[in-house]
Length: 454
Image 1: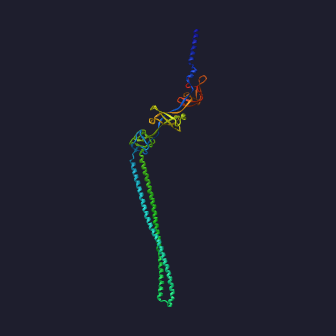
Image 2 (image 1 turned 180 degrees about the vertical axis):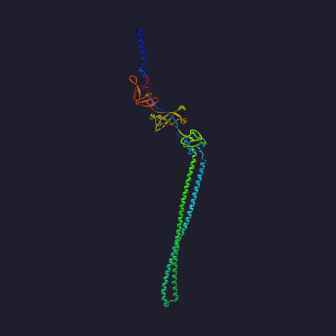
Image 3 (image 1 turned 60 degrees about the vertical axis):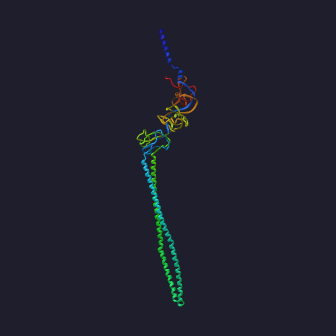
């Protein structure tokens, strides 16, 4: 019986010891799995990865396919805007330019010759017209004068005839009375006859003038008109010929300009100041331009060299942190190639449109390099630290303590039995492993950063 009681006691003690050993003290849970909420001073910083990129980069290609006869730069060369980079095969284009120039000079000479001939022909026509007009004017002045003279002589002859007729009639009675002799009367009669004959002669002369010399004026007028018409026709034909030759000159000038441009295009020049970052072709290589550059130097390339101007850093910032990025904000730059160096930069631009990659939304932020330009090289990977404002007496919670329950953000706090209980809170920005608490907690509150397995 004693042994039975002792055995039962041992079992009870063993059971009690086992229970006590496996029961977790609530205060131990609170100390081990929770931390108190405190007020701290935090420096607002955002870390991100970035890449050193050229501010401006272009693959330089010729406008037309061709063979490189001379390559004037190598990788790493610093060039100025307009500096020759390469020369393409241009012998044929040079010959075409010489031919175009010769055709232009020939066309210009043809125009000059046609213009001289036209002016000469017009001068000949003008001289002929001037002569015809002079003869016409002389005839117009001469013929009326002759007619007026004949008419005046005719009027005078008619007056003499009338006078002779009157004297003859008066002397007939005197002859009958014997006052005058027959000879005297015959002289008067003869004068009358002569006057009649003179009138008839003047009438015939007047008629002759009217029938022969008036058509002469008409003939001279017609001749002058024909010369004038011929001269105008020559002007019209000459103008058309001049216009055709001028058009020919313009066409040859255009061909010469095209030849000059094509020849000039064989001299490949730098479009801006920069550094030759890649060389895709060698002398003798045939280059066929496309939208992308060659990846290696080969016999057939799509670009000659790659030219870059300036350097900047392009970093991708998560959407949640974008409100903490401002233009002009200072940035620290860390490069693996210089572990003991911290370079400085500033935010120069923020992309207006997001990039979505693997369901992660981010924005490209470009950073101007202030120090380290001579050390940072294109395509280097860097880490950047965006420096924000310093905030004092900020209520912070370990970021690991923040959880989400039913769409609400909050933390787990000990209840009256020191068991985890969800409490919603409103959070601000996160810096490193700390997150700002805007409401829902006070200083000294404890939050779970881990939970017991049971």
